[in-house]
Image (tube, rainbow, N blue to C red):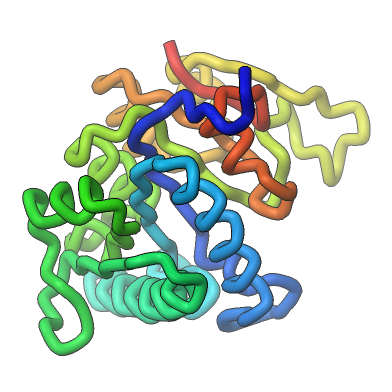
Length: 240
């Protein structure tokens, strides 16, 4: 397939907060923001409509803090605010590359971002703007993975790209098992049955129920996003 010919018209990219740390132990790496912006620019030039959901784990992890005694609802709300910080940083990096971008949040904060309104998000996508969905679903006890699947369904994305620090799924942890085998493709139900730690079970179930294909791949692989969008086999695909 000609690399200039995208296979998908509309995609959703899920970025973990940790991905934005780069090699740092905490916070946001400006070098990583520039890198991500460059990868996104290549997609936009193909005419692909792109939405992004960003996590907040580089700043605050609600689940981890709640396990230390904080009320889970409060911890999750703090985690949602961390995703807004990441989304604003990513918006700035994208706009510096000349990409029109809108941040929509599931928690109203009109001074810094638009509220999440589906029809407005669709209009932005149709006009070629990148839409960043922040603050998860706006509800505690739901991860940004679940938010990503939910938003992908709402905007009728054809595929969800989950960018991670690893190049895909393995049958065991490759860090501890040198004989771990790479999984090129797998069914949703098998991910659930084997409890593979790629996304939380709610997100996988929601994707399965709605036949949303997922691709797990390494963010740092140069042009990986573009390759997937153009139909190349990169990372692990999860579908039926």
